[in-house]
Image 1 (tube, rainbow, N blue to C red):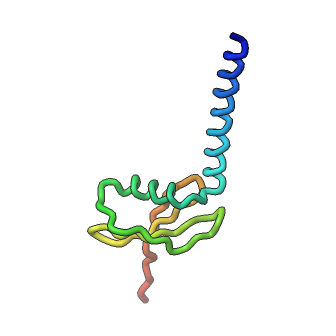
Image 2 (image 1 turned 60 degrees about the horizontal axis):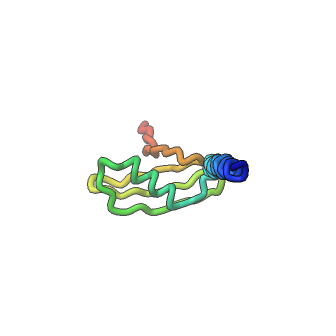
Image 3 (image 1 turned 90 degrees about the horizontal axis):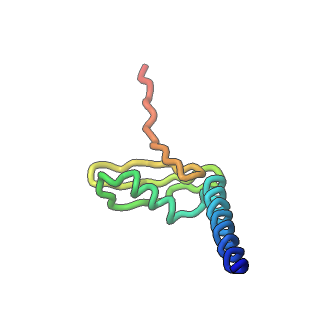
Length: 95
């Protein structure tokens, strides 16, 4: 019985440790493209996405995507931790 409880405890604690390690790795580095694309799809779930293109990738800093929807084309920046940042066009000053 002690062997069974020890094995169960090891599996539970090990599983929690592995899950925390994976979460922290994703938060610090945010490198996995399939997870980034799923995050973009979740972010734009109310719009129909036609195509997602990766424009620029700078490891540990950000990844820039271009998202084509039915209505318009948008640029989205994903930062480590899968934080989605909408890119807006700069306004030009007319003199």
